[in-house]
Length: 422
Ligand SMILES: Cc1cc2nc3c(=O)[nH]c(=O)nc-3n(C[C@H](O)[C@H](O)[C@H](O)COP(=O)(O)OP(=O)(O)OC[C@H]3O[C@@H](n4cnc5c(N)ncnc54)[C@H](O)[C@@H]3O)c2cc1C
Image (cartoon, rainbow, N blue to C red; front, side, top):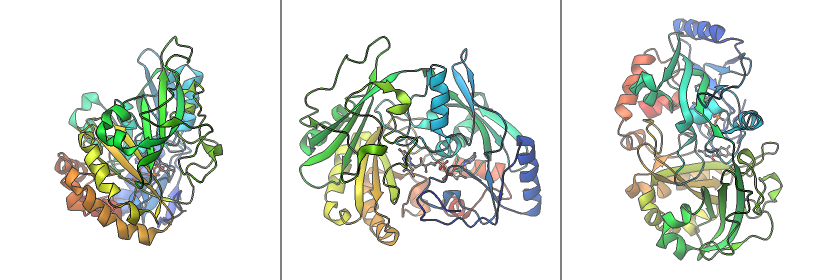
């Protein structure tokens, strides 16, 4: 099996598909006794070896149980292998919504939460921030449930890099459904972005800038406006200008040369949250398909400086870059969340499928972003030494201790975790 991007062939010796949490628990306990390594596999959308194993892959698609909404508590319990697309459709049918989504709905809830996946929005934290409880199988084979009442361990485990157990189900906070209008603007002057980044990024519920860092303007700004309860969607219709950028006259794809057919509805037409917050539609291949990705999160207060630093590299990046997306993510409390206690700007790079060349340029990019304390996305390519990553997380040592306590024999370890955790 390969990952979604096709740049990694998993080394797993076998794949198991347990049909109950109990069967999974017994399998993990047995693997621990046999000294085998086990790794949960989500929807395979990571670009590095975080989901790889030389042991056994566990796929959760045969676990029983469905999506269960608890209207009174405003939560949903969702099997971990469910995609956000399937979850969104089920919630929408019952009049509920999540606070945000990533650029694509194809990813599993369990895998996305474990890696700190996020969307965009100055007041919108990463997808993990919606988690109110996780149910997991420990390395010991014990079935456990963690929620806010579990205190520190909950904060250390939700964004857990797959190191603390196999999550069978998650409970997420939900809110009444809402509608969103999406508009793309073209030719946003860099001067406006750098003069007041917060004003640009905070102008709507979600703002994404798509750029190659060259020239005087940002080619595309995607603006997602949340339609207020009771509004018909016409209130606050798209402005004629967005900080000097003009509305696009036709639907756009984030990659300038690609057709917008696989993108969600634009041109200011209101629609359900799940059909507007992701850039890409669930029924099509997202993004370019044949690509690699890298992303760094750093303090939003330093966004303008960091963008200037990357702009100096524009000519070096150009041969490898399809496009870069600039988003914002609000702070959260999960120890290994890349936006841990830090309102962040996220600089994402969609690369051409030239892994050797991309890996060669990453140290240069990381040097440029180092002064800002840039934290790499756990599921994307980076070249940062483990010690440098550890130093960026105030609770990293606590996480390391938690992993050592909960998985002393290293059942859930893989080469990635050996590298990152030491
Ligand atoms: C086209 C594209 C667009 C993307 N857009 C975004 C974006 O907008 N924002 C963003 O932040 N990221 C984005 N990503 C990255 C993506 O969200 C992450 O890679 C995410 O982890 C994918 O989830 P997955 O289920 O595919 O994880 P996998 O790659 O399958 O697994 C990731 C990790 O989670 C662990 N894991 C999976 N399931 C479980 C489980 N049940 N219990 C315990 N551990 C588990 C795995 O063991 C592994 O360690 C994008 C990726 C692609 C390919």
